[in-house]
Amino acid sequence: MTGRLSVEVLRGVDALASLRGEWEELFEAVPSAPPFLTYSWMAAWQATVGAGHEPLLLCARDGGRLVGLLALSERTSAAIGTAVRRVSFMGERIVAADGLDVLALPHYARPAVAAIVTRLAAEPIDLLALDGMPADSPMLSLLAWQLGNDGRRAYTLATHQICPYLDLSAGWDGTLAKSRRPHQFGRLLRTVSGLDRFETRSVNEPGLVGAALDRLLALHDQRWAVQGGSDALTLPTVRAFHHLLVPAMAQRGMVRFEELWVEGACRASYYGFERGDHYWLYQTGYDPGWAKKSVAFVRMGLSIKEAAERGVRWYDLLRGTETYKFDWADGARVTLSAQAVARRPAARLLASARQLRAATETAAEAVFPARSLEVLRHWRRSRQRGKASPPPVRGGGLGWGQSQ
Image 1 (cartoon, rainbow, N blue to C red):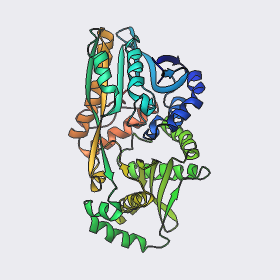
Image 2 (cartoon, rainbow, N blue to C red):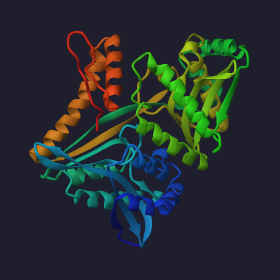
Image 3 (cartoon, rainbow, N blue to C red):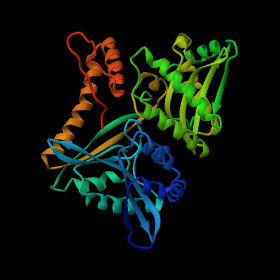
């Protein structure tokens, strides 16, 4: 470092595009950075899911060199007739990015974060909601110091998501032995591999990943159709996001589709990202007509085996506590959510509405019977497409919106 860092604040889509070269150079210099901090992820998000949000980019520089970057997104909402300025992480809303943080050169990490957080605290933001931060982020203590002691805002920090993972340092045999169903996996693999035209495929070539994404989406739709659909990949904007993202990530050698084929068709597909010794499993899909053959379970085991053989150390299952993840996971981390709310009635009301939506979704999942949840999910999909009519649930209906 040559001295005090300066922080440049850039706004707008043009500013985002102007940073591409510097951003990509910075990312390459941070070996531990996840795929969710790439320029490709953010640009695809802004062009699709984030349309209507304005990029807010805080750039820490040392003598003009970009050494740290915090990518945020802002929009103005109305509450009780008052405009409220809301700021959150770019790239998080709807598409479920984990580990969002300041992207900084390793030897600049602490000073870059300090400079950026100090500048962020000076912004006239009514509602700052930073979801998905890693629990070891240097931002956490600095946000608490800058915002927790600011009498103009109410600052809170809470657990956001639980993220299971596997440590593959013991190799495949050791990992399988620690799993919940090692003998069952072996038996099911022998059964499936004996079927006609059984094969596994891994797709990561730029010219082939588009078709692999289409197969994943089709299988994901089939798998969730009987349960009312999935938030993860249903919306047209989310699908457009992945269609932009996947070719760009393939050019960087960071995306993989891992498929299981039987009888001439793809029966299960796993979509993830890889960098160095870290693999992130992002989405899955399988043919429900083949569920009794456990094709999804088998393909996941083979995905873990192949990752271990490639030298992957950390197999990250990302957010969610679904049972299938804990067939394999041997640990879990958490991400955190930091929120700072201006002491204005409109800002507090908007923050309360945000928290209520999240709590309502959690309560509905816990209380409603499975059939009612299917109906509610179908209704929610229709409402998001502008074709909604109230869901026919006996005893009254409940609809919920998307958080944030």
